[in-house]
Amino acid sequence: MATETVLRRMGYTVLRKIGEGNFGQVKLATSEKHPNMVAIKIIDSRRGSSTLVQKYLPRELAILKKVKHPHIVEVHNILKMNNGQVCIVMEAAISDLKREIKLRHHIPTGLAKTWFSQLVSAVVYLHKQDIVHRDLKCTNVLLTADYQVKLADFGLSRFSKGFPEMSETYCCTLFCAAPEVIRCQPYDPKKSDVWSLGVVLYQMVTGSVPFKEKRAHKLLRVQRKALQYPVGITVEEPCTTCCSTTLPLARL
Image (cartoon, rainbow, N blue to C red; front, side):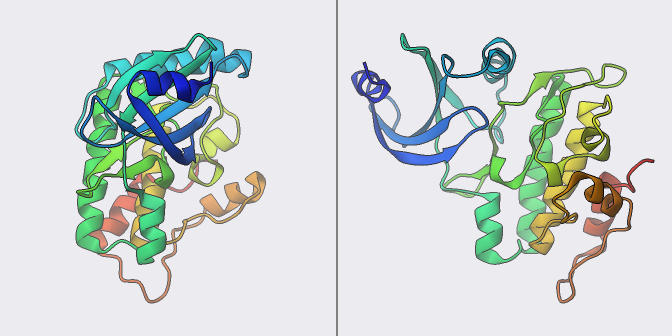
């Protein structure tokens, strides 16, 4: 039986596809159980790799069942279908940080402070729970109807205490990745998350990425240079200090 038919019988009516997660599609739906629309991430475990089924998916589900924070997307239900698909039903957002940056060209200082502080509070909460996200980027920072940040997509997340417990899964979107991840060296995933936070902050206040190379070996060279800011955009000193702290010159 088709997944959407089963969901309809459970009180969910799928409207349209709204995105792609690391390992599945995300669809917008109405719900008989919730007053607002929901987003449903549909993961097909039968078509996924053994790595997805045995490692990433169990981790994601375990983390989603554990976390509860005002700036982390709220999961309403996790449904396991007879056809091997897993449906994660969560609160829906109206936008994400990447879209807002594109729309506004860059995020005004006051709003950037608010959104970034909300994002940082979510990451601090995760790290205190010994959870690392490992894919922090603007498309995973959702925004609700009242423009509150909701961190989403835990498909690459894992439990980790950080140093000396190192990670050897080299994930994360390339231009957001810390240099040790790009080099495929064992890395502290909590510190890697902090690096990615710096990339997100830079994008918010400038409208562009700090490191624009698409090839790994060239990106590593660019990461060793001091940060440059676009001409014509004023970035306040506390923000530049924060970027410089989270994005130190790449280690040799």
